[in-house]
Length: 319
Image 1 (tube, rainbow, N blue to C red):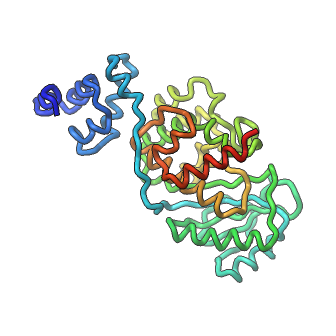
Image 2: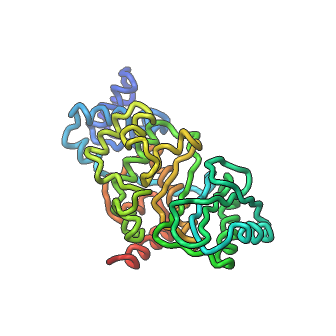
Image 3: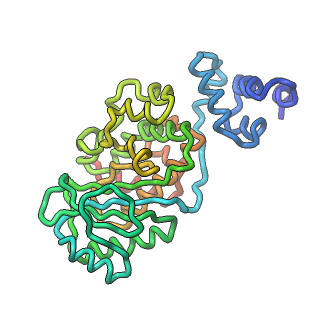
């Protein structure tokens, strides 16, 4: 540690003042968090963001800010839920097949209630014959993904099909999310939107689907999200509609963060990789903002296998 940094760390200045000085000396936010706040990156980020808004960053600090923060992905242990939209299977027949495979399931009328069993409901947005939406209970971690293997196997054995009207929605438990993490989730998803579009089919890109609109068309999106005082303000910014790639109403309804962009699928590999990716994204967003907007940026918070998969999907789906 050089003498300037040591002097700041050992000074009698307030924590905020120390952070400001270290930012101007060119330290990264992660380095400062380790030195000043016992690893509390969010505190440092808030000081940095205020300095940025006030135009107080010198050239050294601005260059350091462009350094991409990285995160080692943790073992997947998130609570999550999945909604499969599909057609070509009768609801009763599907229920019976799932029960026979050891999956608790009931058929119900259309509703948004969270159950402790899988439920099969109607969905008027899906085109085709014998349409349905299959909604999971709260699942968790690798055991939850193992249950998805059973469900996807049954869907495929029963002949379930998907088309452009179908989506696969994923909920991630958000009860521990701070407002700052929520903001970074929206900002990071927005900054990576074109990258994510690249490994989605054409029908789920940009604003091509009315049920999962993109953020690119929202003027000054980053600034408006950063200035939001609460989640209600974010919902108002997004026109009090759930039909966005990240649903601003899922917290008030389910205490989750819902991601709506993925195309309809009964393929376990596709959906499990997407769930892992989203888990890593919300973990990264606890502390960090994405700076670059390329496919390579995914390496900052995903393992090699997952990045390779999405690189392959991007090439596979390239026009």
